[in-house]
Picture (cartoon, rainbow, N blue to C red):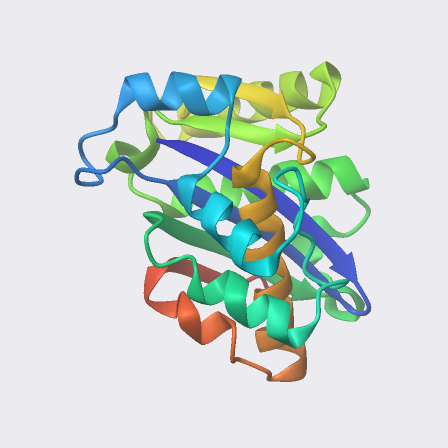
Length: 210
């Protein structure tokens, strides 16, 4: 299993979305061989079919907001074969939580990841890989240090076997996170839930940060 993470700061809403890819078995039985292949050549079979139906290039990069409604319907209806779960954290920028005031953008990002992880079962993520889109090593190092400190305080093992940087241009998992983040923003901010409803039963945590 691995986590892909996408941040959206659009309009008045800040959202951070993790999509957790599962193996073909249960959530408790990760397919480590598949995980290695996904990290080296992370294409999703369902995305091949979606691109074919959309008649776009096999290397087409999915982004939520430039796509038309008809394209989005094809995309979200095509997600059924993919086993994934969603954990999201959102807040209105004008109502930034007291605990996050004065923090840099990187620190807000780190605090929200930490919050989502602490809200999850430690058994659910201990061996997972966290893939961050284009995250430089200093950011990944700061996240590792913060996760170590907060989990030591909580008497929990530090999560994630690895924290690595990915490239959304070639990583379908990161593109999935981008599309999910866009649908969650429309659901939370615009009360438009057509696309959110296609995966709402896979949302494990919808954290409205206060």
